[in-house]
Image (tube, rainbow, N blue to C red; front, side, top):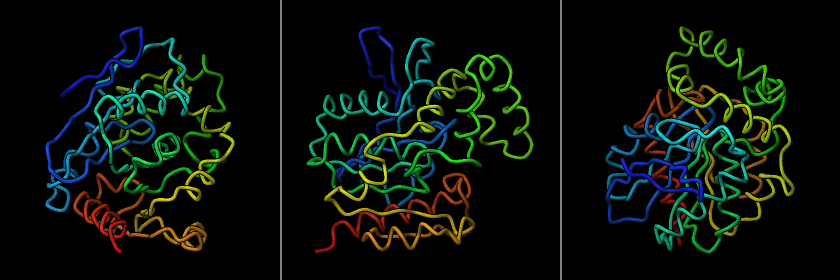
Length: 259
């Protein structure tokens, strides 16, 4: 694992950088997750093995630092990732992002449009969080209440019904989870959906088969966004079918390279 100093406070983001000669893929994880936890098996699949694969743990998650005084907004995450890809000298790269990692990916792509070969999103948030989502629920609590009790309750409640997410959520900063959730509830202007539609590169959106039907599939296709389906999986497709997710990512890359 490697580390990258994010700011003048010496806060460090940690990441895996797996070698490959083909275009680098930057993996951005979702709420309460971590690249080091979610994506090693996906990245190891034959379909992606020729690519350089960069698996990050966002600040506040996984093995990265968790400062309590950090803002943890979607825009702040995108800002340090922009510096990160510049310092890695990624002249051309692919972004893959899942769930609430999607808005971060889109803010990043908006800042470096000329460097993006393609962007591939899996069940990503395109609009501000709405009722029924975890980020909406978390973001509507007072931060002190969430940090000092509700966070632990959520971890415990999910320990049996969603043990994978519970395990990775448990090592996140409760402050970071609260603040990025509030950021997701507030949203941005232009919206993340508008940014996606405005990107000039080819784009792919991935659904888990168990998440369908989804009204957004038709809307995305109407905007010339390629759709891929991961069989035998729902929202947590990296855990449920890592081989299928790798295949879908590869199809997204191949779609972008079609003449």
